[in-house]
Image 1: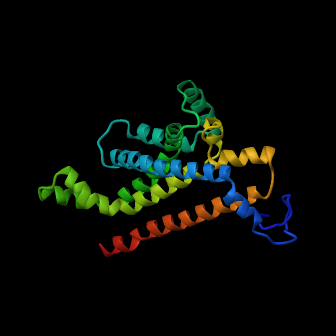
Image 2: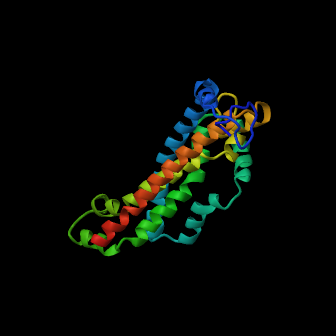
Image 3: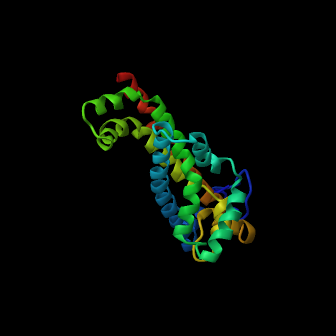
Length: 236
């Protein structure tokens, strides 16, 4: 549909054109929303990777009470409907004037992205032999040095894959973004919703194709990162 020369959404296309892609890349509103979403996704990837990795370490390697409850809380945002989270975040952010801000989006999307990092890093930690860490500790390594030189290299593929999935969870998210956006700051998902309501043209299809293509590329990268851990594990 993004290649159709018609000014209306229709399939199959009767003729071919790239005008809608040119309209997308030349429209300041579309580009502003896309860049804003990329900034949010990048920052979300960093914060959720840090929080998710520390949470996974605490759950798998730590001796904490109520581990099950902590893990359930970390994975809870994957179960709770996004529309419920969106309403809750709006009610909290509106009085604080965080709607439409980078900080507001960062908080909301980090909550949604942390579970993906927890899952991938937890899987990496469970595949890793704890004897390696015990051997390093018995040789006099501190906990920090043991983590940097032994644990981190072994779970790095899981951390990297979790970071990619966190980026995708933020960049592709539309439901929560619909509630916490405003005129000053809106994600590409909110921009799509608005154009569907008020300005439905094949530019929507062009923007969707760009988002899907970028997501598929990142998913491929995550798959390569995750699969790269297997040969090294066998070699060890």
